[in-house]
Image 1 (cartoon, rainbow, N blue to C red):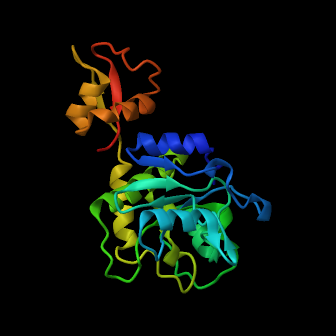
Image 2 (cartoon, rainbow, N blue to C red):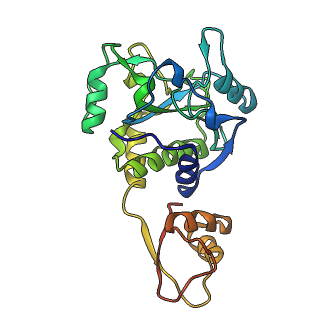
Length: 249
């Protein structure tokens, strides 16, 4: 149980985990809060969109459609592994699901079979839609799977949750099959590995955040992630022997 992330904090924790974030239109104030409470939050729910194409998928998830207004999630994960934030607050993504599943998520234990729809999931879960047709044939690029892993880990890390706080829609609401094409136990294993203790690096003579990011993370542009993770307001203010945490690759 936790207080929901603010829009600014969500962007911060996602980028610190190495996620490429795109902010869509007025997403920071786009929500369904007038229809019911948002929070306390207890977990992250993963979906597939049953659509193709980034632009159209993001538009649908932002606007919704007849009978189900947007936002339909908090973020859309495209095939490149980029995350498009479309909502902040209550979103129409989870619907009613099994209260026993929510209790298991809160306790971070094995999930029971979802056989009821008696609990408001839109209140309790962050929702991320990954672009996929959901037909069992549409591929899941590694970049997209890595982004799902990073998104879930970023939110779990902030709230102090384990990988068991991440579930699929199919584990929440009877009759749902998303995400289809990979197993949630397998994905939770990836999230668990990502949540293992962060690597600590000792600054050496001549180091800069850019050189550390390039050498240790394989991308010099990720110096900003290191700065955010360590709360470094001046990225040039490093001293030999200083210990800094490195985000996962």
